[in-house]
Image (cartoon, rainbow, N blue to C red; front, side):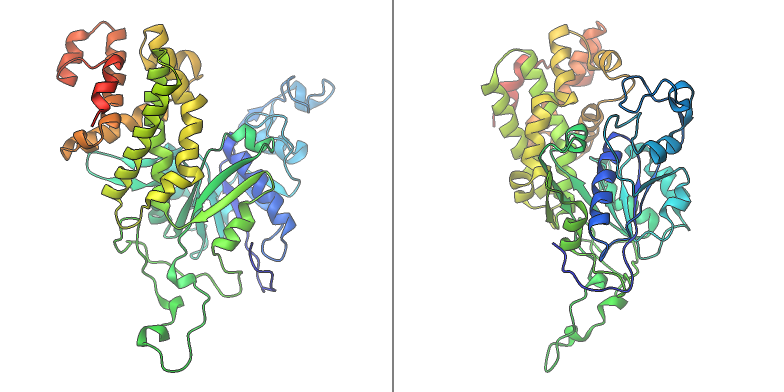
Length: 436
C-alpha cells in the first residue's frame, strides 16, 4: 500500500461513466478515498449521462408515496439523494461521498486522477468535450476492455485517451463481473500502470555518478508508448505537492477486501487480454453448442490462450509480457470467466443450438446491446489477413469464419458463404482447423 506521509495537496478523483461497471468502480474508489484522506480528497466525482428515471418497484428504494417512485426525476438527483444508481446498478448502496455530476467539464475539473469507464464508441466525443477542462498533469486509468483494431493498425484505448487529452493513461481489466464486484463478492483485477519518468520522486544520487543521473526527471516530457516508440504526447510532470502516483498508490485507490488488485506495468498485455478473450469465448460457445463437452472447451481455451500470448509478442514485442496472459486476472482468469458464462460464450452457444446467426441471438437476448467478440473477431481477422498471418492464429481465424458461416447460413446464402470464406467452414471443422 502507499506510504503514509504528509503532502500539501491530495489527489482528486473523477470517474467518467456511470453504467453498471462504472458505478461499481466508483463505489470502490469512493470507499478508498474516504479511508485514505492523507492521499485523496474524500469527495469523488462521477460523471453521469443525464436522463429521466423513475425508481422501479424492484428497487429497495421504491416507496409508492415518494415522488421518486411515481414520476421521472434526473438520474443524478436520484443517485445523490438515494445513494443508489437505480437504473444501472440497482439495490447496491453507493458511498455518500460519491457525487453524481451531469456536467462532464465540471466533474473532471481539478481532478488529478481520471478513471474512464464508458462504452468505447463514446471516447472520441467525450475527450473532445473534456479538452480545456482537465489538469495538464492529470493521469488516467481506462476500465474500457478491448483495443482499437483496423486493417492498418492496433492501438490501445488507454493510449487513444492519452493522445486526445495529452495525458498518460493506464488500464484496468480482469475477471470482473460488475454485479458480483458491486455485491462485494471476492474477485481480482489487474491494473497496468507504467509511471512516466517525469513523475519519479527518486532523488538524484550524490557523488560521482553517471551524467544521466543528474537529469531533472520532472523536465522530461517524452515517454515510450506500448510499442516501444516515443509517444506523440508531451507530458507535464505531476507537482511534488501531490502524493506520488505510483503502483502503491494505484493499489491503495482500487484495492478492497473483496476486490484484490495486482499492479503491473504491461498496459498492452492487459488491454489485449480484455479484447482477445472475447474471440476465444465465441469459439468456446460454438463448441458448447455442439455438445462436445468440457474437454473440447478446455482445448479451445488452451489454444486461445497460446494465441493471445503470441499475438502480444508479435505486435507489442517491446512491452507485452507472456506472464500477463498466463498469470494475471486480466489474462487467464478473465478468459476462464468469459468461456464459462460470459455473453459472448452464451450467445455463440445459442446460435449453434438454434441454428441461427449470432446477430439474431443478439437481438433476442441482449436488449439492444452488441457482442464485442463479434466485431473484434472481424477486425482482428482483417488485420491478420492483410499481413498474411491468418495461419499463425488458427483459432482466431477459424472463429471469424465460423461466425460468418453461421450468420450467412441462417439467411440461406450458402453461395455468399463460399465467396467470402473461399469454402464453407463449420464448427465441426474446428479441431482440424486449430491443429498445428
